Length: 272
Image 1 (tube, rainbow, N blue to C red):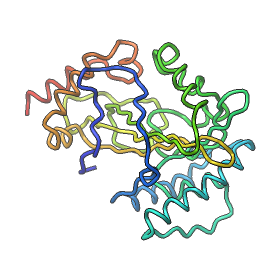
Image 2 (cartoon, rainbow, N blue to C red; image 1 turned 30 degrees about the horizontal axis):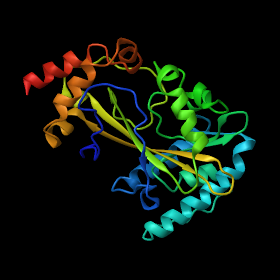
Image 3 (cartoon, rainbow, N blue to C red; image 1 turned 90 degrees about the vertical axis):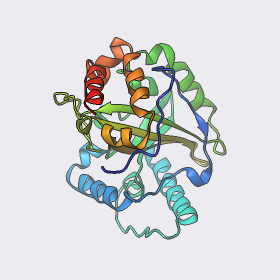
């Protein structure tokens, strides 16, 4: 990962929990960049070799997944006509859609609550898809400290008010000790005071309601770069990062694996 992440979503005021939703233009729903072929090849390998880890479906998500596949094909043909979209496979439509885009795809359907009914997630950041399928929004996010108190109500409200002609995007970031895109395990390596061994990972997430089934599609496009690359690319990166780490509550630091990381980053910056 030699390229810097094209987004720098660290709040200058320090850590805070917020949805941070922004209006999404249809042409910006799916992102295509120079890593497409490499990432799609990795997706193909994961789907072929670890299907039950990266794909999860329930019958209630099939129709929405089929609609999603059509919307993905339409968007790519409209905004990226140079791409080859040939896929002749007899497989679940959520898998077929996932093979065409760099994004991970999650389909949520409203029953008693919004539930995850189908997903193709090849690039999770320290979470397991198999434990999430069939669960509600609140259950999906329950391990996250402070979610119930601060974000559960607004998140459910946004989903309930979604319209097919009104989509959103947001950015989420973390600092992690491994650059791999596919990380379904919570196991962490021992931290090192070296900017080459810490990685800034950004998720560009979108929310869109499908016009026919009215299911909601949640997409995740991942970007990863070393902290060293980010420091070289953005003058303000180091200061913003250390401020964010220092201001993160203890419970969130424990959840993220950030205990002592701010001191390690400061030591590495002094060595520069």
